[in-house]
Image 1 (cartoon, rainbow, N blue to C red):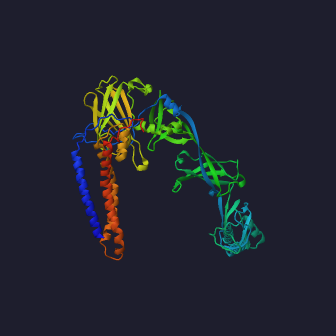
Image 2 (spheres, one colour; image 1 turned 60 degrees about the vertical axis):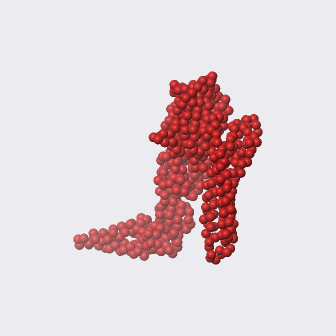
Image 3 (cartoon, helix red, strand yellow; image 1 turned 120 degrees about the vertical axis):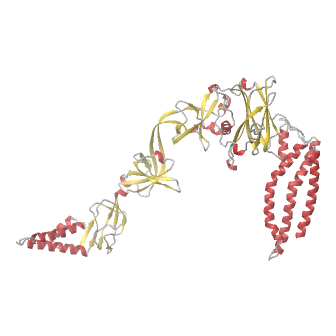
Length: 635
């Protein structure tokens, strides 16, 4: 199998050497034509950079390009404004109030929860409150308990009382007082164990200890937890019942973290539940809990609600409407704010179709308005229609990145597209090479008046702009270049184009601080192969053999990187198999050898044969006149 690879490679190396010799001969034999100076059509758009770089002033690179478009005004004709539905409004002060809608759940008010416990160990005999969520009133019996310690303490109390009566007539100092002290101490022990006064009075009256003590409910509410069971031994630490008063409940609203800053304790709130359609429960914000849910990015806001008729039950899902008051604020309609992702813009209306983008800082949204924190003043006229911001997004991007600001003093009387000042000077824009390619390019602008006289002494700038392409990870590219005057109204500058694609170009000329001409172009750069030749023909330009060869070389270069990556990956994995001698090598070698040979053959075919045959066919078509410039009306 190795012999097959060697033979195949030798054959193609010989073919490659022959073709390379023919190609080199043709390259040196054909005289390269000079760069064309045909004026570019309005469908072209080069990338200008500036005057020729010197040793102290290097050429700008992609890292020097501005990644964020500058702010500049937009000029629209009345017809254009009407067609896209431009509407205007006014910046004004308003009393701002807003509703924050959220969801929530009902929970027990922890401040109205009580535990039922005994302060002495004993055995539970009878249980009267024997179900969870059973309603009990204050003083209602819950269970009875027998405690040996309690019985012993009662007997001690009765004995102390009896001794007190006996010793009260004693004439010995301290005997009567000591008996009284013992009686009082025994009674205090009973009270510390929370024995009701009625039981102590009954004990005094009957003179017999109570074996089964009845424990009553200390509060009114619903039993939410029950651990008291008949014949159960209860310690003093055993929690026998949990009783909750549900006349007032808590509601935990899940509010997004962006809206929390507008809420404060004491704000009113209303909730609705699906089980009570048409009914609204009112309450107020008690506390904003200091924790954010990492999964939902919400903050729990605790509301206190009255619960008449126990319509709100713990765990119930509710809809929350929080009422917030923000006071008197400067606001603009939400539809007037254009959010680019890194900044917020509004478009000031100066009249006569002059719209100026203005960067502002906005606060929270209140209904259909945004609160303005910085950048605007009251009574300013702005564009408010959402259709303008949506349908004209591409025009706005061009205005924010590629348009040239009007001269000082233009104000509301900005010249329209049909003003005479914009047509007195003609702009002739050319590039070398034509069309511009990736890398270094030369850009020339020739200014002539209406009668053909060259215009000298002007300040000429060329701005190229490409909108951001987030899907490809490319930011917006924007750069402005000032060209230098050569002679006879000719201005020239050189620059580097970082990538191919579709650009918008604005050429602006000013003289004595006044705009004398502006031209806007769109150009596709960096095309190769058949597409590039077809584009040149569609733009009405003649083709030469050099154009054909340049298109073929650029197409081969564009195919070089992906092809080499594929070939290297395949060869790195399959070539070692051809020299293996282990188990399975006899099976893998017949499979790997044709693949390796095929990859070498396809590489030569794609990078050498295809460009050569492409040039031969196109030059033949060029000689026969098949590649002719097409006018705008030709098919």
